[in-house]
Length: 140
Image 1 (tube, rainbow, N blue to C red):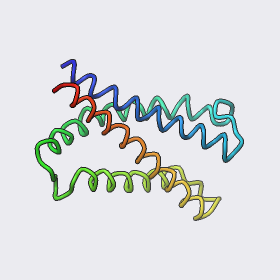
Image 2 (image 1 turned 180 degrees about the vertical axis):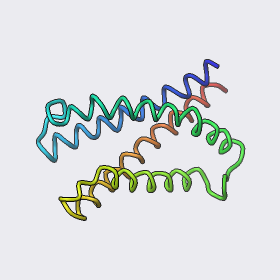
Image 3 (image 1 turned 90 degrees about the vertical axis):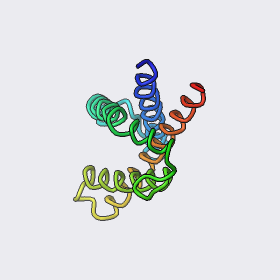
């Protein structure tokens, strides 16, 4: 049970912290903004806690069972772990783009937000899965 708690919490938190760090740096460099001041601080107060709870739930209910399947089988649903993760990142990133797209900024905003989402999910899942791999190595 202790391992399952570690496999649920550690990869999720490390993935979220990595993505948040990149978003803060991106905000500072590209927008010359301060991510911890208004209006961006609403993102940290509302979205991050909700996203963390959702990520922990997904980690426990979906990621860990799929991780175990990929450990014992090289393919699940005909996809390797890399292919499955890439498809997941693309679909999640495009969904992120649609949810956070501000339509009055036009289609270029949709494209930029979608690319940002794809990159954020790719970073998250890379950190998450590499952490799971390290945890597995330490167990054996």
